[in-house]
Structures are given as structure tokens and as C-alpha cells.
Length: 166
Image 1 (cartoon, rainbow, N blue to C red):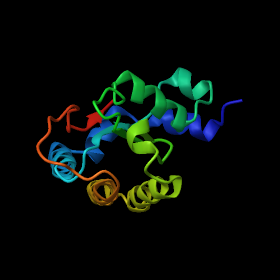
Image 2 (image 1 turned 90 degrees about the horizontal axis):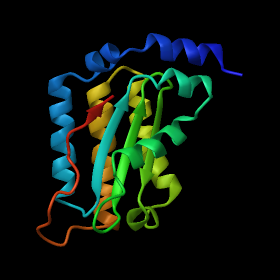
Image 3 (image 1 turned 60 degrees about the horizontal axis):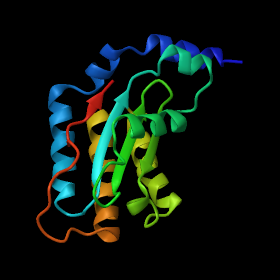
């Protein structure tokens, strides 16, 4: 059975809500943070912000983790030379952050390290600090990836650094 509070949140959190929270300027700051980080490490980072999941998914009680895995596949985050794609999925209606990592980087990072990045993002989001929460979490992620998968010189950017708002 679908949780009515959750259903209501997804029905009332619109794409316009996402655009208000993540203005063009905020998205540009986030994109710059991703690009700067990718100069420090070999991972490819994608950020997908979804104000609310599709109604069918909510009615089927799909968990944000499962939705993140679907988007990881749909946006081909797995399709990198070193299998080092990392998706950060932010679901505004559920107030949830999920990280899905490809095997090349996933085996190097412990679950509690990924969770610490998610906790950083959620902590600031609760205060409405969308830019600060995302930049802080990405900076933390970049430092983590720099330690685990440091850059080894020039490389091709395989995934766009531009955040996506669905």
C-alpha cells in the first residue's frame, strides 16, 4: 500500500520546485565543482536531481535507491573506460540522496564513506541550502575519490559534468 504522505509529497513537488531550488547559477556552481573534482581523480561524476518520481513508481512504492539504479543505467553512468562512473541521485520529494557507483570505483569505497557524503548533502538540504549542500557533498566526494582513485594525468571527460534536473 502506498504511503499517502509520500504520495502527496510527490504530487506536490513539481519540476518548478526543482528549478527554484536549483537556479541556473546554482547549477553552474555545481557543474564547476564536478569539473574541478574530476581533475583530481579518475572517476566520472553525474548528478541527477529529481523533484518527484513518476507517479507509477510512487504507487508501486519504488525506493529511491531502485530509482537511482534505473537512472544509473538509463544515463549510461556505467559506460566509462575504467568502470568508474558515480551517480549522485537527489530526490527532493523523499528528501533522499543515493549514490550508485560502478565496480571500478565501488570496490574502493566503503558503504559508510558513501553514506557520509549523502549525510552531508541531506543535512544542509533540510535547511534549504541547496547550493551549499550540493557543493559541500561534491567537495567531500571529490576528496574521497582523490584518495581512492587519484588522477594520473590528462584524460578525456567521458560523462557530462552538467547536472540534470528531471
